[in-house]
Length: 440
Image (tube, rainbow, N blue to C red):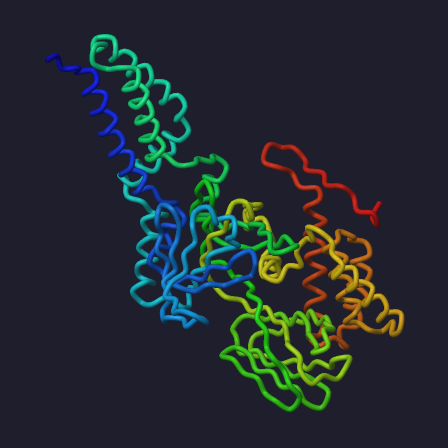
């Protein structure tokens, strides 16, 4: 009986390459997500759902292990699973610096030292991976030529099927060793940058140290991020957290900020669905007194509180826009509470603008309404009208709850945006943005 060696070798090649390829695929994890593996993190989804847990990164998805089991209506949950095909639902993944245990703080410091101050061997490996990614197409062609040359003297044993699998195997090795290389982003690694992030219907700017990137994600460190928070208010009751105390009494709302960072009082939502805009900044260890335009039995105070954190964001929702060093020192804190740019206008924005204009018609000296209308005009890109109302409000700063600090911040943001309209790019080309309707 004759043995068909070509068939046996072909089957052996397919079997070995399948095993090695499967092993490589099980080890291939996203470089950014891998950096948060084993840490307690917060996942924010694009539908505003929030999940807390210890992150476990797998090649096909993520698992968030709850600290304590959660009793649902019909069962007990101990973790949440997000599959790779659901990554487009991720708004961001946060790792809070002030919540890390001493062990994890040391682990994070070791990781940062290895990343920003690599040993010669680690530095060489990083450069080699970048080279393999950049030259992947050429290297795949080289593998094809080598396999073709090898087949000639062993033509009786290496079939076309074996040749195809060997070429595929070479491509998988290059793909595993390399990663998605971006020469432009490589220049920003380890630098403090300003990045833009899509948040619901707006684009906001944030400042952080750019650590790493992958095909799907960007990783930033030491970001001062403004989180939304809500306090339920009732007349005569005091509401306290570890950062804020709010008391509603005698037609006013008194708010004390115990944080080291300022907080932003965004609005007061009444029990009848009406929302009264505030847009008031309260510095650390300071107190403001608000006078709502109507009485309420139940209301919620919408606040933005600054947290220092590391974060991973999808590249589909974020982009590195500037080096942070190009901004004046006073501008960087303002970015934390930046107004953002409206991606699309909705009925809510239109109704808000009409309400502010009506308030100013009834009371032209309403400095708070003027400041809020100016901020809304900045979001819409109407800088001329924005300057008019913000200047009007700043001149009446003594009647504003925060003494006009928020109005001054928005005037500085207006100046910065105007400067960005004519900004020289790296290649010496000038970026000219469209003119606004209300500016010549």
